[in-house]
Length: 334
Ligand code: PMV
Image 1 (cartoon, helix red, strand yellow):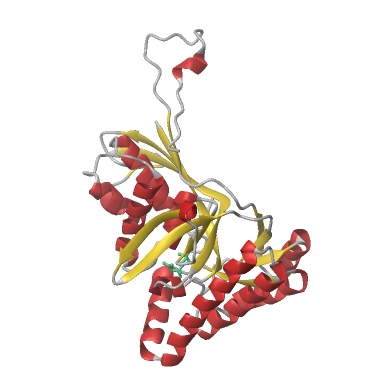
Image 2: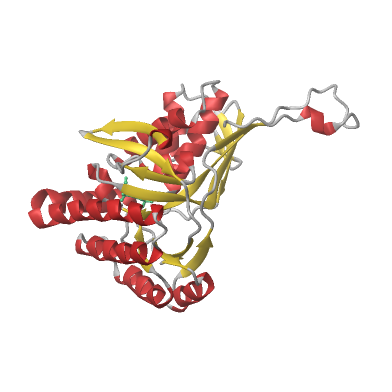
């Protein structure tokens, strides 16, 4: 059996602007998608018969890229879907890792990050490699932000845009995520911003400003300046609101978090989904988010990215009494 797991993420700064090759910063969180996969005669998802066509478009794309080998999979889903926490990227990363391992293909982070991004792009018809790279690498990732040679991860190009993706050390910061409970798919929101930016110089300049702001945000992270980082995050939220991707529920959770936070903003595509607050009073911030009608999660960052393990079947003649541990072998992709 193959087990592959990959984390969700939130965006510290730069969502939407990153689609146009502007800088962005994202952190992986301790909410994961885990897929357990066995080769089979027909497709099965969580014990139920499935056809290739009934699987998610991301899984379908990955499956087709590898010859549609029928598999039985169980999905343990700990990332809320359609909520700005990169659930589809985590699913693509975990599924790609599992299928590639099944086909004896390399499951190094770069190969899986590229494939998971292609699957995301094909499913959504748009988007940046931010979510898939954050999920595969884990920790903290930066896109198109100056980096040192040893932090460089990979370079991706698509549709005339390009991204240099690098890692950064995740400092001791506490974040609280607040979920509005409103599900908002990414595609239409990305399309809304694209249209606005194409048609209006004002919107174009807001996207540029978000990019500049994010570069300043990276300097705050390197310099451990949480007061300034919080202020930049809150300003980033205002700019996203002007682009039309916030909503009253997100604004009210952001407002509720502010008195106990350095700053707060929506995360991901917006229109619902989640906001995130940078705080050193996580319990108070979580209580304020709950009082305002949201569901708070005090998240852990600095978590590992994609992990792929293989558990081999015990040979039929190996008795249970003979040191059962030796019949199992775990191997990690890293
Ligand atoms: O809402 P999510 O978790 O799918 O995040 C989307 C992030 C965007 O910047 C809006 C789109 C992208 O592809 O980068």
